[in-house]
Image: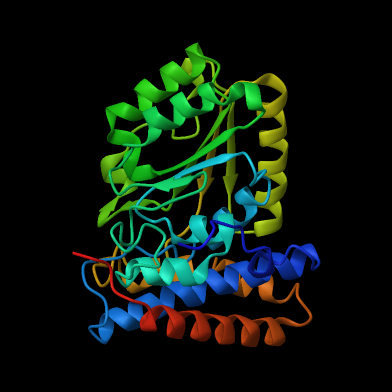
Length: 305
């Protein structure tokens, strides 16, 4: 098995920030669209949950992490988080294709990944207790944790248990709520009462709120909040009101055309494209890179039964 290394070329570490951010958003978008295309051709089995529309969250927030030591805890909609963390496009393709060269040797699939300090699970809120414990255990190293959850997770008791323990144990952990206003097919107004932004306040945890899809703004907020976590050694809560442009998984989108159009107006890829002079060249690089990585992954040996 190849050494688990961060692919900084894919992450664009040595290019200007605007180009780096645009490249990653475009790369994640095309990766997700490729998965949906593979499903339509019956080349993938099971299911997948894309992060189309939420790419700026992953790119902006993970840009503020120290990838050498910090920990990321993701959920079922994890591809954008994973690619923003390590840039391992071929390994992720291979994992979802059930290949032995995948992130977890082809056994974790689309939702359950583990790579260095990155972990994801399809169980809503299921990783939060582990995230709190790991953040406390690694506190002496200077590492912090970042746990992603969604508005649909607000009904899980583990969320509040984790908040309570994180506060009591002074866990250096950032809770990020990616609020796309719909849990599978259930609108937020039907399933979530009260304020998501204020959820952590009763536990003595500082809360932050952002509404939008601008990756620069998200990155700046993440940098500020993570700096506060490192300095205080305590948790924080970041509520991001974002958009989901794709279906819950492959084809289960029950929203009406007007609601989808309103979400598409906030497409982070389209909004950020005008900030990058060489967007066409970056688009071409992303498409060529993904085509090559997919081709390699398709040729890899399948996972053992």
